[in-house]
Image 1 (cartoon, rainbow, N blue to C red):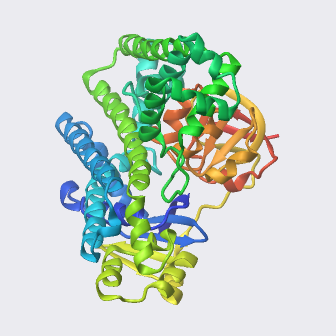
Image 2: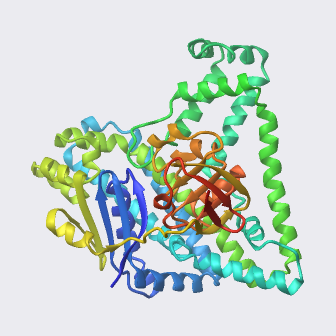
Image 3: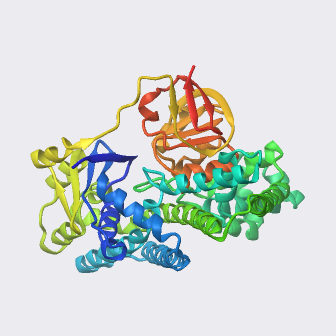
Length: 502
């Protein structure tokens, strides 16, 4: 049995993968297949996710078959939104609770409920992932269909460009909504001459001057409450504050960025994509079944982005709970995130010492998920599983091929950005290379001439955000983060999914 490394992440301690694996291990009855073996290797703030290739591929083929049924797609849509909303609302409630007065039982129960809701969400998230992750089954199906329609119609269309246009979601992600809300704030400032003058002043003068404009101050504070989590990732502790967004507004004012014009450009961009999708559907003479594939791809791309956003937002909102648990157990908040809920309950209610175990887990541990059960291992037992992991080696070639996510060409210097702390090295015009992008990497993505990732298909974060930003992007390159190094110069042909070293 081959246990293949399919994903790599940074700063991803236990709550998310723990919930994900319990959730994904419950889809067997829903899909009529076995769950398979999954292994997570946590080491030095990096986690490798590896799975039993055969079982995952079996699940993926079943999901692909089910996507032809509108009722199944509707069920995944409905349940995904329900569970995402439940996690968001529960985590928001946790952020408002005074845990200093909570009993050990209340803390343990709050954590268990959080993980339970998270698990329910990830059950449906795994179905979305299975459609295209690692093997690109949905991408291949749609590309094959588009090639046939282009050939039948004798059309001079690029398959990759048609694919990207048709599968781009029209629903707004939280990142898109944040951008729109920010430009609304900017247009409010620019519509008032006194505000516009204030935002030309120094940082401290702007913050003091906001007291003269209570409605604007309250609007900025609402924006902070809604979007402070964008760089929190799984374990923070960074949160955007009023100073951050005020400084950002002042910077845009000084640079002459027109908020009202930006809002119109965003609206026009959405209208244009919708128009192109209608025209392409007619030009390609897509059948009802063809359109079902496209609808599923667009929906799953949106659902995956929505879930990823809420994972980070919920991580930020639930942080006060982890902080209080850490205080009670004599640990730091990061150590607590390496303990299972049942272990935390033992520590809170029975005083079981957890410091040594937490230290070992942070240093190195392995999580094994099989037959609906999750085990956490350290030491020699963990090493035995790590030895079985198979990681694809980068080829000794000057060219690498992946999946086109946003067409275009670019040439530039490579910057490997795998975590928010890597972003300072990113310069405008560089080529951003990452295992997989997340909301906290968007500031670096905006500077990129092109984006390249090891992981992902049409539903991944990099694919969707690159389309929003209009930046060439190739995903699913598998080994690109190890095939290049910082400072290398590469040529990117994102239309054909090709990267060449220069």
